[in-house]
Image (tube, rainbow, N blue to C red; front, side):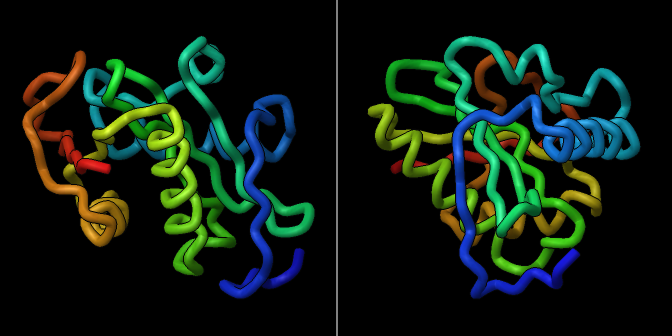
Length: 160
């Protein structure tokens, strides 16, 4: 495994849920969510839900190494939700999450959405994610869609 750097070229592609590295990262994402939240507060998507119509799943690669994943789900004609954003451990704190987030926001804009929202955890383990979203202009909001008030969740939104 090479040491990834922020200046390395990142290739983002749609799909790829069958790739072994992607399967491993989705499983890690689900396990981490379960480690930090009670079952009723885990909103991470498993493989079946990541394949649902209306959801666009992306992976980011540096060379042959999976760096990150993320998805965009349309929840209304003008409103999208970010789902399953996760950076592989070897690529954390190297700008990959910001690259993926920029891409997902562009996908939402290309879909004709004017608003993008997300749900993330309220615990300390999710602080880096909340900070990233805040740097991109996301602000805390009331629960949207099927989300309900939950001390383990933080909902955030921004206009495009």
